[in-house]
Image 1: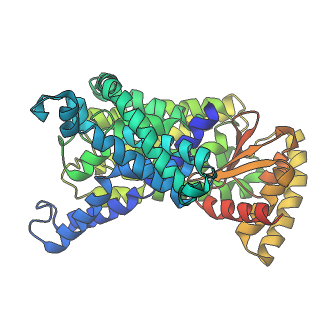
Image 2: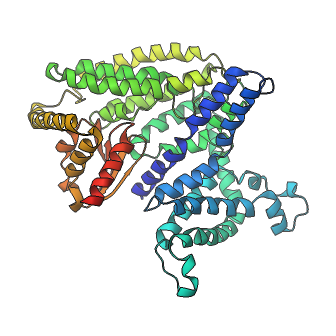
Amino acid sequence: MMSYLQRMGRSLMLPVAVLPVAAILMGLGHWIDPSGWGAGNVYAAFLIKAGGSILDHIPILFAVGIALGMAKERDGAAALSGLVAFLVITTLLSSDSVALLQGVSDPAKVNPAFGKIDNAFIGIISGLIASVMYNRFSHVKLIDALAFFSGKRLAPIMSAAAMLVVSLIFLFVWPVVYSGLVSFGTAISSLGFVGAGIYGFFNRLLIPLGLHHALNAVFWFDVAGINDIGNFWAGKGTKGITGMYQAGFFPVMMFGLPAAGLAIYHAAKANRKKEIASLMLAAGVAAFVTGVTEPLEFAFMFAAPPLFLLHAVLTGLSLAIASFFHWTAGFSFSAGLIDFLLSLKLPLVNMPFMLMVQGLVFAVIYYTLFRFMISKFNLMTPGREDDSIAAGDGIIAGREVAAGNAVAKKDKFSAMAGEIYQGLGGNANVVSIDNCVTRLRIEVKDMNAVDQARIKATGVPGINIVGPRNIQVIVGTSVQFVADEMIKIRSIS
C-alpha cells in the first residue's frame, strides 16, 4: 500500500512539473501589465491567457499524468485512457447532467458539490482507474471479429466503461466526499496562521513517505475549495491571505536549508570537508534558485532524524509567521528564487521582501540550531561517520576515483547509471525502474543483494529504503537522464 501511494505521489510530479511554464507566462504578463490583467496590453493578455490555459486545467493534467505514471508502461494509450476517464465522469456528473438524472428542472438546485466535480481530486481518481484499466487490458486479445479493438485500443474503452460505474457510485458518494474534504480544509484554514503552521509541519514530515503531495493537493489545488496556488496566480482572493500556504516556504527553501547545509559542512571532519562542501554547495544552490530541496533534506533525513524533525518544526513556524504578518508570495513549482521573482508583480503579493528578511533570520536559526544539535548529540551527518564507516569509505573513495575516470571517458549519466544499476543487483535483482523529480524509485527482488556502498560511491546525496522491496536513490534534478540510461541498460542486458 505504501509503495502504491509513493508511486502516486511520484506520478503527480509529471503534471506539477508543467506548472512553472504557467508561472513564467503569467509572471511575464503581469510584469507587462500589473493591474489590467491584459486589458491594457495585448502582449500581456496573450501571456496571461496562455498561462491560465495550464492553471485552469490542472485536473485534466492530473488525470493524464497519474494514468501515465501509474501504468506499467509509459504509453500514450495510458494517457488517453486518463483523459477519457476524466471526460466521462465530469460530463456525467456536471450540474446540468445531474439535474437530468435526478429529474430536477433547475440545475441551480442540484447539490453544489456537482458544480465542483471538475477538480484535482476527480482528476487523480480518473488517472488511477485509467491506469488500472491499462495495466489489465492493454495486452488482451479479443476474438477476430473485434480484433481491431484489442490491446492498447481496449484500455481507453474499458476506462470509459469503468467510469460509467464510478460515476453512478459518485452520484451518491461525491456530495459526502466533497463535504468531508471541505470540512478538513476548512478546519485547518479556519485556524488562520496556526493552521498554516500545522500544514507546513506535516508537509515536511511526510516527505520520507512521499505522501506530502496528497496533502499539498488539498491546500494548493481546487480539491477542497482552497486552491491557494490557482487563486494566487489568477488574482482571485484576499491580499495578504491568499498565498498563506506558499509564502512561508520561501524563507526555508531559499535560506534555511542552505544554512543547514553550511552547518553540516562546518561540522564535517577535516578530511571530509572538501567532499561535503561539493555536496552541500550543489544542493544549497538548487534549493535557493529552484526550491528543489530533496538533495539537501535526504542528506540528513535518515542520518540524523532529530534534525529532520527540527526542520519540520521550523518549516511550520515559518509558514505561521508569514501568515501571521500577511506576507505573501507565490509559486507554481517550488519556493525558489525563480518563482519568487516571477510572482513579485502579481496583484495578491503582499510585502514579499519581508519574506527575504525572514529568510535571513531563519538562516541564522537553522545554522545555529543545526550546529548545536550536531555537536551536542554527536549526530552522524555527512562527513561525521564513525571510523568503521570511514574505513569503508576508503573503499568507496577508491570507487569514486574509478567512477570519476570512467565519467571522464564517457557520458557521466550513463556511467552513473551503470554503477547504480550494478549496485542494485543488475538484471537479476531489479524488478522496475521509475523516477520522480529528484529520486530513482526502484523495486528489487532482494534488498540484501543491494550494494549501498557502490551506489553511494557515484556521489548521490543519499539512499532511502522504503520497504522490503522498494528503494529510492536520491540523484537530484538530473534524475530523468540517469533513469533513462538505466532503462537502456536493462533493455539490452
